[in-house]
Amino acid sequence: MARFLFPLLLFLAMHLSLTGQGLYDISRFSEIRIYFKEKNWQEILDSLRDSPGEGRLTTAYVAVNGKKYPGAGVRYKGNSSFNNVRKSGQDKLPFNIKINHTQRELLLPGGYSTLKLANGFRDPSMVREVFAYEVAGAYLPAPKAAYAKVFVNDAFWGVYTNTESVDKPFLLHHFADTTGSLIKGEPDWQWKRPASCPDKKLPTLNYLGEDTLCYQGIYEVKGERAWDDLIEFTRTLNQNPTAIEQILDVSQMLWMLAVNNVLVNLDSYVGGFAQNYYLFRDSSGVFHPVIWDLNLAFGGFRLLTEKDLLNDEALQHFSPFAQYRERNPDKPLLIHLLDNELNRKMYTAYCRTILEDFFYNEAYLSRLEELQDFLEAEVSKDPNYFYPRAAFRDNLSMSVQAHGEKIMGITELMHPRIAYFQRHPLVSAPAPVIEAPVQEMTPNGRMIKARVSGAKRVWLFYSESAKAGFRRVPMVADAADPEIWATEVFILPGGRFYVAAENDLTAALSPRTAGQNAYIAK
Image 1: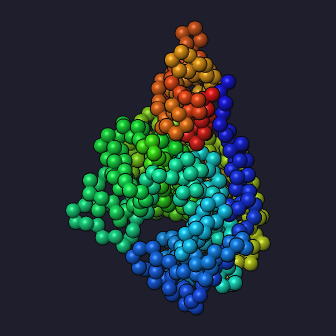
Image 2 (image 1 turned 45 degrees about the vertical axis):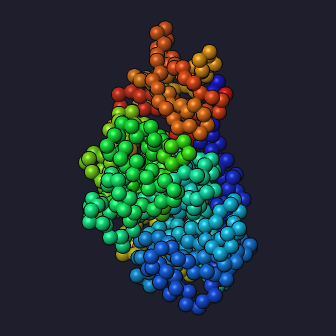
Image 3 (image 1 turned 30 degrees about the vertical axis):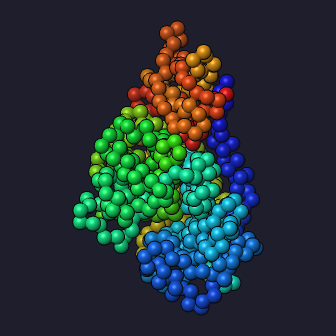
């Protein structure tokens, strides 16, 4: 019998145990104390924010859970979470702290060098971001997130969300690789597009030609070949889309799109600014998505395009095929991936899996209440909490006003949304049933077999080794027993595989969280 790597519950348990000690332990608050030498530190940080580059103010030291890090560098981070809060004259701005700013050898537990602290902008409930990362992390590479009490010069500055930075420790953990190109969809709103470049200013993954200057105000990159890799990705996606599966982990990308859709996270590729994601190209040449910046999940952001604001009902009934159905030319990733029939069916299966795991059973509500119970005492003492105190609990179930906008209650959004998906003809369609596959050694490799009912086609996705990208081959039904599907492939011990079965409307996966998880070749 093939061995299943990390079923969902085991994954979540291991995820929690791995983070049980350290910065991202969700069961306790980290304590972060920032000590500035300058009395006008806020003015200096404002000026650095307005200057080109990523200048930082050097601190006397930053203390993290009691350990001092001299000379750490601080700057403000964020876009709307900075700009709107600064305009309102409030002090609780988001921080980016570089622990080894002046002393390169200094590292946080786990090898981290950067702290990213979000301020709860547009989230009176204070649970959107942490819970959204918990959901995402069950299905694709996603940062960990927990809570921190932040002090500035010994004054309590407030409760922040502490999100894992996507850098070397993250890449090593998820991809066993730190040498590849890292690309972030992050537009520079002050960028002046060269006249010779196409009229694009958002990280939509459109192909903009071979000149790297046309991409440089739209994406941030790390790695010697990163600009070339980005151009190759966009060229392939837009000019030869059938070849994209040769360089992209399509399953992981479909998971990212599904998470953003189900959670109505429009401050993402599926929304108006097409931002807040990473692409990491590993040493084997495969691109992997990393989801990012989930603070506005659950309807905290309403822009479907740069101009179209969705009302409450539109958020509740946000279609899994929004932007694709309209053939939005600024969403080539959605269009070209979902034009593939199998991808489209896998995507609906992924939406269904998220809903079954967290929402149809109302597990999400229990988890959100648990997080709020943990937070309430400290949030009640937060001197810079943006909202009326009652909004903390109220916003779990009802709309409240925040920074001039109405923020829907999470259950106010999700209860009708769950009902919408339960009626959706594709997401709710009966799916094939796959029994766990078996593997048998053969003279030419290994035979993978699975019993599948209700399928018209069955596919095997496999990687020859632990680090190789996935390939897809058809499985063949047995003439004597048409529910037995099999194929022979060459997979080294430690290689991975999963099975996808499709009927006329949807698909099923085994393991059901395929992409994040797979069976291991013995």
